[in-house]
Image: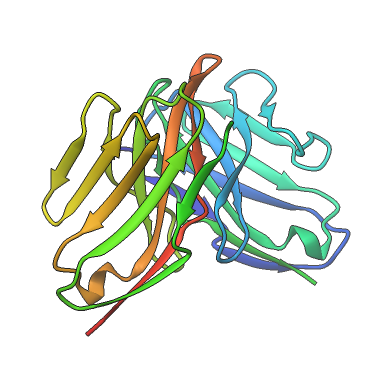
Length: 114
Length: 114
């Protein structure tokens, strides 16, 4: 299965600023996803990163707040814009084939907004 | 209909004991049921999975039991070890649009005492 590298692994940011998280996969994959995980809680899908087109966002998440890029089949970025303390969370990248039964996850980015 | 309900929230087991985590779903469109294991500071990793046409799947000390009529499935960890201490997420997968989507349960924090 694919190996996913996420950067940064953690960051502390000031409110009102933006942070871009990078996700690099060691092989070409059809599907890439971004999740949010509040500490001690489950994973919530933010969006599906589509290569060559706009991301598909889940209910409650919007492009202005979480712009996503997917320039090729191995790389994606998630930006958390105009951050507030409520955005403090773990952000996870996931990837796999189009109809993969099991997706691989990166180690996540732990974001703290102060 | 998209929910996957997981219990218990936390579980403490003695070394050598059996750990049992239960999940239930409502949406009959789900057709694949994976379990993920997550250690602190890491992303979730696929542990074992089952399709609804099978009632049980065993891989080493890990067994999934699946009851299609009740829409319930469970993870059994036999001879639990301290190294099994982690958070376990059940999930349900279905095709949404042109890709598979995962819906996660709320997670169970397992502690295995030495």
